[in-house]
Amino acid sequence: MAEKLFTEFPPVPTSAWEEVITKDLKGADYEKKLVWRTLDGFTVRPYYRAEDLQGLKYIGKNPGEFPFIRGTRQNNKWFINESVCCADIAAANSQAVTLLTKGVESFTFHLPEGKVMEVADYTALLKGISLEKVPVNFRGCCPKNVDGLKNFLKYVDSLGIDKDAVRATFDFSPLRPLNKKGSFCEDKAFAALAECVKAAASYKNVRVIAVDAVIYNSCGASSTQELAFALSQGSEYLSRLSEMGIDVETIARKTFFEFAVGSSYFMEIAKFRAARMLWANVVEDYGCTKGCPEMMQIFATTSEYNLTVYDSYVNMLRGTTEAMSAAIAGVDYLEVLPYDFAFRVPTEFSRRIARNVQNILKEESRFDKVVDPAAGSYYVEMLTDKIAEAAWDLFRKVEAAGGYIAQFKAGFIQSEIKAISDKRDKNYATRRDTILGSNQYPNFLEKAADEITKEIVSRDILTRMGQVVPVHGCQKEDAVEPLRPYRAAEAFEALRLATDRSGKEPKAFMLTFGNLAMCRARAQFSSNFFAVAGIRIMDNNRFASIEEGVKAALASGAEIVVACSSDDEYAEAVPEIARLIGDKAIVVVAGEPACKEDLQAKGIQNFISVKSNVLETLRGYQEKLGIKSL
Picture 1 (cartoon, rainbow, N blue to C red):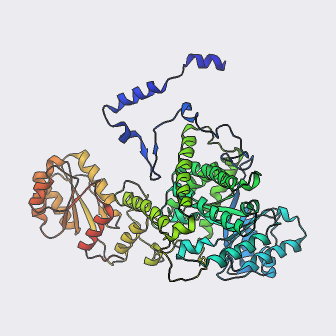
Picture 2 (tube, rainbow, N blue to C red):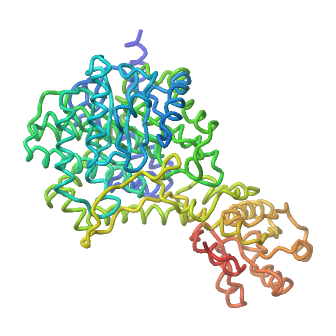
């Protein structure tokens, strides 16, 4: 039956597809119209076919097989993780025990700064939590606080359980202070890390070396950079600790990776698949070929970089798509950040929504029932290959130049990330890329709540759950420039907050006239444009005459009057509008008409269009309106 069906639909060669595409383009440039040029430095074709996969060596591998591109296990049962603040240990325990009844499967306990956990503390914190069933993760660990780890291991021993069944991670990371402060006590930090590794050596599933790749995403890095620099960090740990006499297999077994999940759905799926493959090759190159140590353990968190303060409910959608990418890609642990994470200590409601995203993915969408469902997709397989190739090239470049520490001190890693983040910022400022509710399609009626402050819209986003994650390191005179995390929407949020806190209520009046289709299209564009800065919008269908529109505009008391019509009508209408308005409001022309130079010669200086840098332009209008920047 199947053979007969396929004979009725003979294969179509690529040349035939290309012929049809070229015809439909009607002379337009194929490369410009259909080929995606990524920030990662490679191009993505509009479609791929089976023939494109012929050169990929890993095609045909099964889940759990080297190089683990399809996953490190033969199932897709990841752990639903949630963070718990440990400022009050009794309260943290009560919260964690309750969460176990609401779908949470593992915990990340954020320790108070400088806290060395005693055996009694672990006893109180983990009361009622079975370590044989529930993984526990501890964040805020300083390499100097080795005693905290040793006390946990003593607690495990006191339980009389199979210690190999205990799954735990401690985020000891000597390179974190270098990333965040620009310096660290190199010899002492690695000596302490080596002590941690030795202490946990006989505990099969206790990992103590954290490779923090989240910070790259939080600085606007590309997927390629996230992978390359994470691999370089991991390689640094393998190299330095092996030089201290620890075997590579032990080091690899004690290492785990923390990644953020970005918003590019298929790219993120490919990123995690490529990450496993690349790390397996790195560990193999260090001489370890036993399989298990080559498996990358991934702790994924939805992106802080993508969160917004305004229209924050959209963060639920962002977290959902990001979680889907991570789940499909086969991560080991996944945490979805609450929608209000960027501006306050998350509420019970926001936490519930965040964890239920994963509950739905498992219980209703059945994402945990299929291993690597993206396998065989021509598009995803090619993305995986391209990201892996680009990341490997960058990784080798760093390694050839002395490794992660040397290249960070030289400023190479910072400059590479900044080059990409600058491109992102420009794309957001010109709205080539959209941050829904911030630089495009804002909620016209929204005003920042009293709890939103200047400090919040530009705060250090590595503040989690209401407490600062400690970064311990030596303060040295030769410290270099650290990485600087931020959120993509910060600049637009500061712009809008300046209006909200100005004590003014500036208005933009849409003076619509002439061609109905054009005036409405430009009114909608202009409304979105000015609402980005929190300027109140006064839209109108269409006025019968310019005089009627000007009269209504003056009566409204609007500080900005936007002429919205077709280019053909601007040459005569706009100068008349400007004459009638006088100095009672700022006259703005929506569009880039052919008569722009003539209008400028007549004193019309304000134009907005899709070519405008929205951020810079709106700052200019705020200045005209007497609104000070934050």
